[in-house]
Length: 410
Ligand SMILES: *Cc1c(COP(=O)(O)O)cnc(C)c1O
Image (cartoon, rainbow, N blue to C red; front, side, top):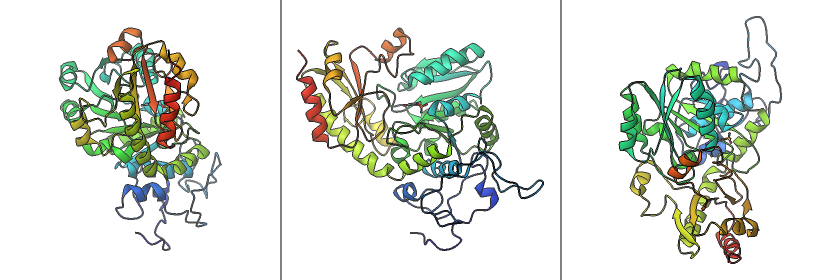
């Protein structure tokens, strides 16, 4: 363990500045992720000794003189609270550069700025509905082309490659079908033609998966989910280690202006402190509930990456350190959907995921409402699919709640 001795985290002005442009470095040596989540990139604030990162609620910063700067000029571009979060997420994802956005969609919007009209991008067909809408409804209009495919089938990814393919964007495990895509092979494939692999790592968080170690170029997060972890703020994060992308991404971040507010950055930092124990509890609970659902007479099929008979179980084991807390399942009868949603009382019927509270979602009308029917059905999102984001409550209480709601189905 590092000593909290004087000077350990005295950052130079360069360090203090925007982590999106300057490589982030830990002020203390190599430590377990369990320790880094608690302490962040900076053990304490050097001027006052504050253990909790202060919320620098200032839009602008005084310059000491002409052509002089403290490293902070204007909060859209750089803010000290946000910088601490950017350095922390970079450390957690094993990257050099971190950027914090006002939402996950803000992060994904900046990534797409790396491409130009005429470029082709391969995208997981089974992904967050908002990402689909952004790509399909906006960028497709500006001359970008997308192939929406089942990226858990690597032969399909290979088959979709074209001479102008410049990117592969995957969610793994996918939302909501829990399909797992091969990060290493996707990276090797796209690098053959100088493209980039982007992984949306929202579902596992860096506690269970670090895609940059497996060859991904960019990791994006909806920090709203497991990283913040308490269903109380929106945030987006992006991490990479590519020198050539540092300037374009930092520029997109500050030019588009979807940068994270200081208070929200503080909430995410606070959430990250307990990431490791939360992820472990989410996973324990999810495993128990998935096993219980699988035996239930009203459930047709359960999708959970932690089942040994999940089609990509061994791939999961080879690229992730855990299975996370997300489950989806098909009910046998469509008619049970409204009854279940009406009769759960502890579990809340709401969109979103990754918080301490267990949420039940109906993807067809909520998270995946933006995706056209044909594509949704081909991905497996039918009118009997439910998605459960398992929280950290007592698993027995959650099962009792589900059981009670199921008992109302006729
Ligand atoms: C929620 C989510 C997003 C979008 O993030 P916001 O913070 O809601 O903008 C992107 N990807 C995945 C996998 C998500 O679950």
